[in-house]
Length: 363
Ligand code: LLP
Image (cartoon, rainbow, N blue to C red):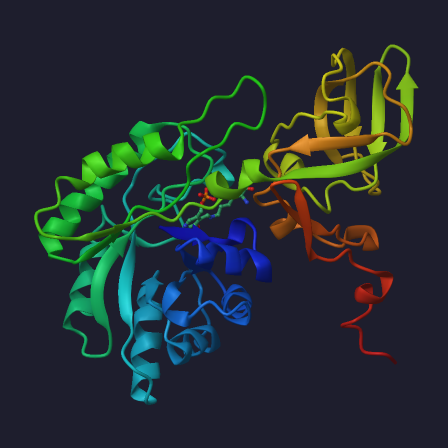
């Protein structure tokens, strides 16, 4: 299994993932840097990205990543020229766009023909790329890869793509297949998502069509970390607008969780000191940023006795919150604390105002 580190990455997370025996998907030089900084061996990292720069490819090949998931004809040429410079020919998988449409937000669906990712299966690009990679002395073509989208709930979308990949793997005779990540998670009370076990059972079933011994990988991000984390805010103001709604403002917002703004994602909220209180009061939970769109939860219920100063927690915020966070309005990023068996460990410290000017070049 490969962990898609874009979902959440810091030094401690890279170490944890490695200690648990997973490989790391890194999609940029920056993610690779963090993994290597954490002591993850390069050959436990897999390099992704639809526009890897020459410098990123050089970094990954020099370090010796396990394989590179190649996304374009330009990249095939870039790898060859780096081998001409004297670097070792890398192992490569080709990212295939299988033409599978998934039920998720359009910003995060990636398997359809109209996509910036991968080699199109339907128009012949995938086979052309396989021809080039297979004939090249400057790379070892070991496998194929697909990733059809993120936060996908329909298992049949995955099995559809997996069957297409299995057919292609049989045709090309490759030794490795990656079925991608993308498994959805339940964010709000009425959502139901397949478990990782269900998902893998379906994928294994599709993989049983492979004709020769083949290494099969998956690379989930969200389904590993999303429900492992909660975000703790403090309520700063409560504004009741009669006949309109009640706004509860907290000390964060779109800078620590841009997902509601970007994808219209829903969340729940509860008061951690009164977890069993009935949640009866309808409110909108908003952040402290200077725009009306800075909404964390458009409509939710909180305990009726919620007061300024209370803590308010949003669960299922472990994926794509911290990693997509920003310093908008120069709001400092919150710390990250790992907890286990009653113990707590600070793994990312709270940012300070000094951090906000660290990269500024003084006049
Ligand atoms: N593999 C590849 C090549 C990917 O591009 C991704 C996610 C994954 C694996 C992991 O997908 P997951 O299991 O986490 O769904 N920011 C968006 C999600 C973007 C996903 C990008 N790629 C969100 O917050 O919903």
